[in-house]
Length: 493
View 1 (cartoon, rainbow, N blue to C red):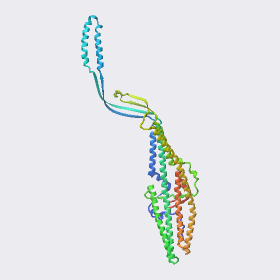
View 2: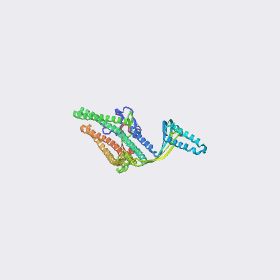
View 3: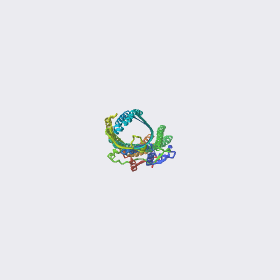
View 4: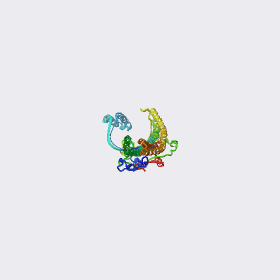
């Protein structure tokens, strides 16, 4: 019984826990965090989201450049031409007959009769000759052609659509980066919960074991005193009930520790389990004033994501406005097979064009109004994200300070509880006291030490929440290194 109340805080948990019968991987918190950042599918998915958003932004960065395409077409075609000859044929016949009638007058008088006979015969023969010419001539042509061409188009004025699309893509990058920061913060807070949760469970298991072993010793002394006739059997039964209660508490603590160990092992993807080497910690000196954690609300992941959404929404307004403006462009085409081109096809073309939608089947004004409303909603969301971050920071700061104060006050409580247990134990041994005060004193010490462990864990979680809400979670390891109180359990150093 001499050791009751004098158990050291640092205990090698592996010496008693059945759940530590196999080899575990010793990891400091920083090592566990580095491993988790590499292996977490949540973080990896967020990384891929950022890569996709950046690639999309890169894809639209060159929208102002020309588009040049090459195409090859194989064409087989047929062309039919029809020409009406009836009018030209009648005109030609009349002109020819008039010419023949005037021809005799142009020769010497001695030959005019001969010329008249000849032209008369020709005039009589002309209708028959012209009759052989059809009134309509049809021509049909079939061919095939290989048509290799290059086309180019250059946007000259898009009404603001191109800059809007580019700004929206950059807003998408900001949103993806904000979501990645959110995912990383949540993942790291989850790791802090699991890592230091296993340490807390180890401490509570150790506390329960000490309580059970202490009551085992009291029960042994009670049986000896009963055998000597110093105390009645009822007192021994009282101690036995208390000892059995302590055993049940120990069994529950052992199961809780096993669950905490499995939780951390799954989180870090280590089948053999993890032996944390970084202890629960508390900085007994107060943190900097709460105002020191404010003013960085625009850098918290939620605000960054909301700002990216606002940028996308603002770009949507410009894009909707561009639908009401004209667009100008330059274009050109060159045919590489000019010798075998279609009859109506040019060898090359260049030009400029303007396009304006006079009537649209979508209400463009309503679309712009909708985009403006979306932008206003995004601005409100961004403002609310900053407000929420400020509130979360203040609440987390108060939680950290409350846990720190409780931890400091528990030091004196534990000292007093240990001294009370020592006094009650001595009185019980000397036969001057009963087992009831010893049991009560042991229970008070156990409760104070368990509360100290819980408060230290609460401090670590609240500190992580404070740093996350103020956009400074990367500084967690720095606060850990500066802590002046550590509760070491298991493999912790």
